[in-house]
Image (cartoon, rainbow, N blue to C red; front, side):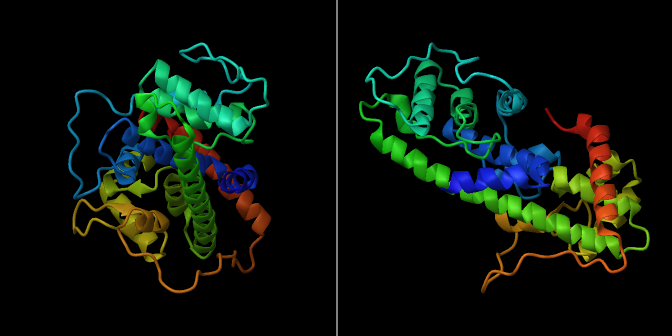
Length: 312
């Protein structure tokens, strides 16, 4: 099953942390759509990275659409919680006496949550239930799915369950593609950095892009403590190496995204023809293990230093 393949891949991937944040943006987008908000992935990625994307309409709302994001992520990763904890309703067990598959139970719990509370938290609950019931080894925040027909309390949940299962499969496939893209981008970045004479600033930018794949000179200057001119030159340098793409079409106030996201968000057309083979490390005369350890250490230091800059 697609969920199992994604779960297994995330469990062994070195890019799991960066993927988890991107997957959370994907899942939160779907939850906002389920509560009736007209929004696309690109808008949530823009918010998450803290960079406005040109040609996107400004959203005027009376409330904060993203207020539930941080509490939801904390709930996802909370260890040792029983599946029945922190629910706004009294969950009841199946009365038929027959064993209920865990996936069916997760869908039933979401339906009960919606009946008790018609909020975005109910739509965000499915990946929480999947993890706490033991269906996934790790939280998979991209697995947010639902059917708005459940709000009208239909007698037969069968059609809704089938639609949700198809949506979960599509979300798992999309999430795994995103994970593979992040891993491949990691490999390409390491290969490019190994060939640079002075890669220090570029390393910091690559670490930033793993966590915030949409950037501008202003955001890079602020987060990496550079001048605006220096940040612009650094982004141009990264673009010349193929690590990012400029998508704004402007001479000033430019916006950059990582290549796989540029395709996923529709900025550029996907490549045609047979799928390309995945990139491999090509670093001559370099101790690869030492280089990878240093790169991961610098990413961890960057994450610890700049985590407070992320929007909440």
